Amino acid sequence: MYEKHCKDTIKESLRRLSELSVDIAAAIKNNLKEKHINNLYIATPEYKHEMVTILKKTLPQVKTENYINLPAKYKGDNYVWSLVEQEIAQRANYFIGSSTSRWSFFVTFFRSSHNKSSIRLCNLPSFPMEAKELPIMSVR
Image 1 (tube, one colour):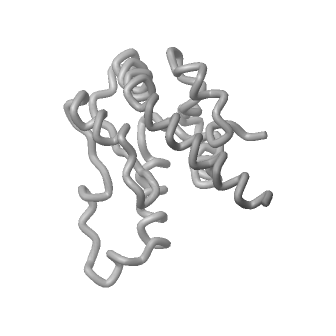
Image 2 (image 1 turned 90 degrees about the vertical axis):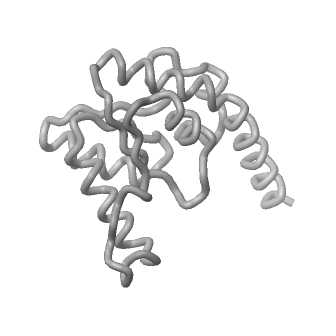
């Protein structure tokens, strides 16, 4: 019973997050514009996000994993992909991470040890309040 409740809660949160994708993408775009950043690399889990599609339409230079050309023997290796994307995120001028992601936590930790700027997605100015309250967007 509890497991079904958790799955239903996550499913509902993802549905609401999808509905708020345009507003979240706008918050990201506004933050990047304020910081005079024109290039964006998006490291996401394997499943596609509507925000990625929206950001690709509204920002001049958006790159995803399709931009990386790894040797064929590594293409299916999620561990290698993760390491490559972590390296990109750690070297970037600016990093926007998820507050619920351990991956983002480690990137932010490394960046802070090198005095590099990072922010949590839900802390962006103009980030929709309703999205902040979704269980999948905050650490509890």
